[in-house]
Image (tube, rainbow, N blue to C red; front, side, top):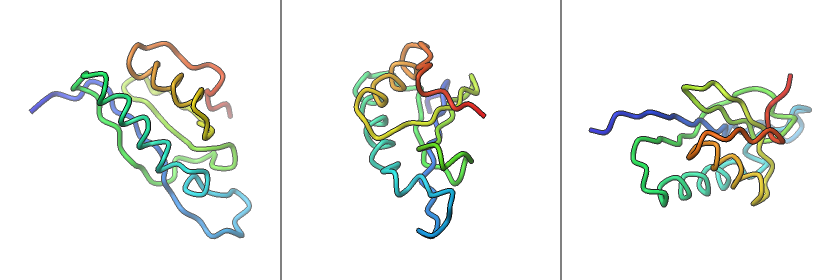
Length: 103
């Protein structure tokens, strides 16, 4: 069994459509997670795990994502540039500052 060095959680939580916070699921979080998972798998690096999560908070800002062990939090819009930049952080450690989750 491979020891996981980096673990990525992406919210796929679903709320009622009348909830003012919205939800990550309605912002295509499952598709975003799948794209990031494919990119990391294609890289050949075997010690990265990308998983669905429940609510990570800040859903009103976009799809919530956290990368461990760094503890870096992102809000990822459904666009290729964001997905590639966050994936670059996962693979190479370069922070995607445009997508950092700010409180």
